[in-house]
Amino acid sequence: MNYTFQFGVVWRDFPYLLDGALLTFQIGLLAFWGGALIGLVLAAFKTFGPRPVRWLVDAYVVFLTNTPALIQIYFLYYGLAEFRIRWSGEFCLLLGLTLNAGAYLTMIMRAGFLSVRRTEMEAGEVMGMSRLQQVRYVVAPHIAKTIYPALANFFIVILVMGTSVGAIIGVNELTGQAITRASFNYRWLEYFTVVAGMYVVLTFIASIGLALFGRWAFRVKARVF
Amino acid sequence: MPHLEVSDVRARYGSLEVLSGVSFTVDRGEVVALVGPSGSGKSTVLRLLVGLLPPSGGTVRVAGEPVDYRRAAMVRAVRDRMAIVFQQYNLFQNMDVLKNVTLAPVRIKGRDRREVEDLARRLLDRVGLGDKLHAYPDELSGGQQQRVAIARALAMQPEILLLDEVTSALDPELVNEVLEVIRDLAREGMTMILVSHEMAFVREIADRVVMMDKGSVVEEGPPAEILDNPRTARARDFFGKILRH
Ligand SMILES: Nc1ncnc2c1ncn2[C@@H]1O[C@H](COP(=O)(O)OP(=O)(O)OP(=O)(O)O)[C@@H](O)[C@H]1O
Ligand SMILES: [Mg+2]
Image: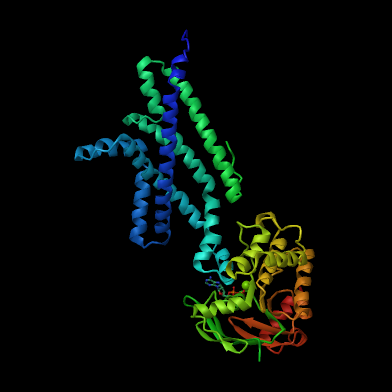
């Protein structure tokens, strides 16, 4: 193999890639929080709701976790276009990832709900806590602590795997940006080498941030790697 | 007037009647031991008293006042006067020892944090855990957790303390430490109901023993009488078995 790496073009394009990384991070974060909200509500429905509601939650979770995120986003982008619903690639990516994350996060949150120890709530109750105070002081911190590692892992999954799907519908997140820039000069290998490095850095920053936050907030001994 | 009067109290779990007319009284400063075979309803009595299980019949009176467990305000008032220590400690796993003890007095009862923390330190010292203020429950042995639970109950400054087999999970050395704490409390005149299988301790500390079986009181009296000369066949059988160990 006598390929000569020429990183010069990539460095010149670095600001574009940084833009892409920023977009990746933003979409990842928004989809995660949106998904967390969906997950929280649906897990509550699944745990406390009447049977038909629980069944609907199950259907949502099964449907979205058993089909590829790519197909879901294709559906939003190309499928809905058939019905004259045209959303931007960014919006479809964000919406698709959010709905998809919502399904996974429903399962994670549900595990948290199930791990609540009734006995601790009773201890709070006999010390005069109202139901709301029990949730605030006993249940919520416990759920947060229990599911935090799974949440942190899932955030990384969305950040890296989820957002890069956007490249295929023309969103210039990090992967998309690399493809766009490389198509001008065919330096694919260089671009993807640098972009891989940027993903690692992005993941690294997110992991450290999450681990430190977890340790500080919930006494979670999370591994950084 | 008795400090606590339980008359003909009934309770059920679903269709299963677990208390079928329980009556006994506890005078101010008295230590009453609740004994009986497993499943006889001892824990249920304590849970009912603190409002975790509504009675399906009968009356509970605290200092002569009947308690209506259907009224939230009344349940709150009862919980202000009584504290319970559970068989399985039930500490808040997400808080350290000091926080476990101070949370309710500070956040729920609105007492001064500084004062409550001082009290908590004294109580924890007293149960031998003065050096574990910032340990979390999962870093403590069962015995240590149980002593935290006792300190937590005492920090509520109850008039009546309910103890549900607080020594059943402890190593023999730790049992003594915990019993010493209870002895002290009895000396100080704390009204207590003590569920226990430790007959030697019951004999030593209880002013009166109430024996339950199948959801009702079989026999009651001073420990010497009831442990050594039970009148009923059921009690003879029970104490015969348990005292031979
Ligand atoms: N949550 C519950 N749901 C249904 N039945 C229960 C529940 N808790 C207790 N029981 C039943 O109520 C009866 C009395 O139980 P309780 O716990 O009061 O007994 P106990 O005297 O404290 O026994 P032990 O010495 O084993 O602690 C038992 O038959 C038990 O199976
Ligand atoms: Mg019991």
